[in-house]
Length: 247
Image (cartoon, rainbow, N blue to C red; front, side):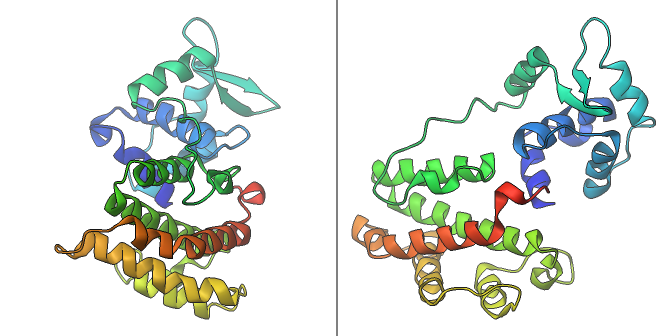
């Protein structure tokens, strides 16, 4: 689960934390980052399994003990589902350096509203891309937009359970050029003609900003692919259907 890897990268010294503290962070990830409607012990266990780390010895017991008495971290509702206690959530926000999502950045580059009802990390990256455009940091905007497209393609494959098609033998995902090839030939969906034509254009500008030391992106470079970006983002988000996808 790439989202979990991305999440723990924000936490300094995660691997050295106690397994009980890791449970707390996994709970935060499942509820706040993934927007799940509660979690159970099995969900926490799957997080340990995904990261290939030694799990806590008795996860159900830990969750139960931390949902009672003074200093509780979780609230148990709806049968056996757990939720974050309010003050514990606030302290965890501070611990991992994750403030509330910034207000939507308004920009002519693409509508931030496209990322409503997706994932918090996607909206954060989109806001950063738009803020970069507004401030004239066009290489930064280009690279961040390229990153957004890459994540959306990966999550499109994950959404339909065929992400094995976009992984190398070592388990890492393919580079963007190969991701695009696999996306366009995958019969599980029908990518529109405009999106097919737009993907290489977005990649080309993003690659230049990221890898060409003599290329400096200008506003005109991004404005030329503005419609392409809107088309691709909207199509991929529609295909993924985040509102009905419980990862």
